[in-house]
Image 1 (cartoon, rainbow, N blue to C red):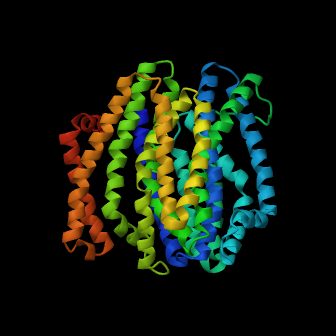
Image 2 (spheres, helix red, strand yellow):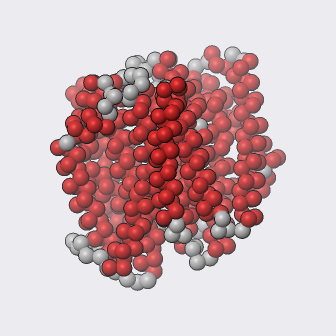
Image 3 (cartoon, rainbow, N blue to C red):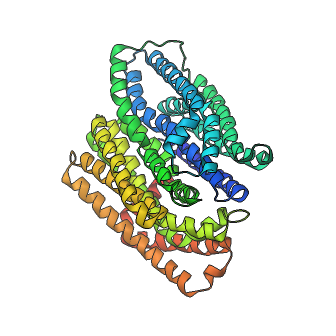
Length: 502
């Protein structure tokens, strides 16, 4: 990794952490202001719809666009003209889509969330109308992010995300009396507009020249469309599955959507930080290394090694730190201790996602770099179908926690199928290296978590305030894990140390 990329990784990691902390602020304000209620359920149902659009553009569009744009630029062809045409077509498509969603928001919500309560449906419809007006702006924000990433400019996209989160929190805190729960979508919209401004200025400074054209070179158009639709589907698989979960949850108990959302938000944060920082840089490197298979394989392994070393201990650590963390962030005001317990139950069922999603980011990026789009498309379709089946089977006997179990099982299936498809083209030794690495990291995490479970079971620690519990648990867990990794997995330990030094 070059010094420039290493410095960028440090900056965007810091910005990602700040963004997630501001996300905690937003969620904490929402929980205390509105609790786990039909109102928050309605807002979260509509916001899930918007995150589908965000995932489509920031991940799906990016996965199709980045390798092609890098290749187009290397060949000296009209890359900026083709890129401008892509922006213009997608912006117009989302503008038309936003108008349709605004007009028919009530019918769409009623059709999708038939089992939701009356108040939940009303709030979901109102929030959807606010979001629908600005879907084209949301799409433009995501496209700018992809273009900047192609030029190795990573920081502005994190500033844009931070503005969305902070403005949502600001509006919820200061405009809740006037706007109620709708203060959150209005804040998100204002933050999106600020993000477009920041990214647009930086894109202009990279000498990208936008052109008011809808014409693409025939070869470029054919290649882009062949990559785009499978990439879009793959990018929204997680969001579609989450959306399906919330549809099922809206028919269980009041607050179930909020419990699933609050727990999945915390569980997804480690993977999101990883995917928007180091995994982004790894994808850029993979896109540039497809002509050197040995270097490509080393980069894939390094990405998996890094994801495992960082994410497995976090997953295990949430077993003991999850409940006090939920209480610290959400509990208070309208969010009760029973809400905390219900949220923690869902979190326990979600924990495998931390590991599988982190590894999936690397595997999927490697497959896109190699052009294995059709394979990912087929796997993505089966994941959505599997999730619907598991939801239908598990929701009746287990309620909303069964929906979290379904998500974890689907995520494991998704990663396993993609990993098998990728590694069957590598030497057998490459798969054995990864399998051995997984075993070593899990053993190190087990050495960490067992003493912490005993600590919570046989000492007065659980009676302390949530912050004090975390002050004791987190540093102790870090020391135990670092020590166990040094003893059981010394090679990976030094690999991470070398990365930090760079």
